[in-house]
Length: 144
Image 1: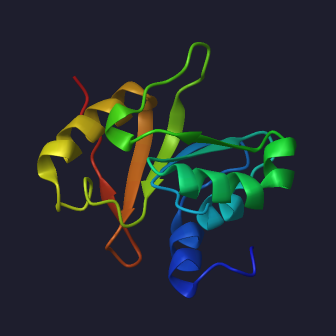
Image 2: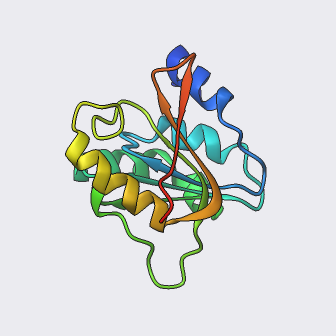
């Protein structure tokens, strides 16, 4: 685990049901500390860390050179409510977000768009977790 992981982020990462083969999507990754900690638990899996901020993505990319080089992690600048799988990109089976207003109720209209994007980018059995529980809260992914 990264030495720079706060106790709160460490609790979140430790509570995620990450398997070595998981395909994980982090929405609102900031500088990528949690994503790097998840990447450390993956063998054949992958984590994609996304954030709307170019600055955050540049920080995450700079801090995760080894994880990205290993193929266990990638980063992308995109807002969660605009996220779509790229051509050939496999769907994700685990999604998490920490302090993302669209998912914690602060911005419900954006939240509905984001949940629809998450549903379109995940497997049928995918799970979505946000902070605000003890330490996580699971949200249902709406399926059409």
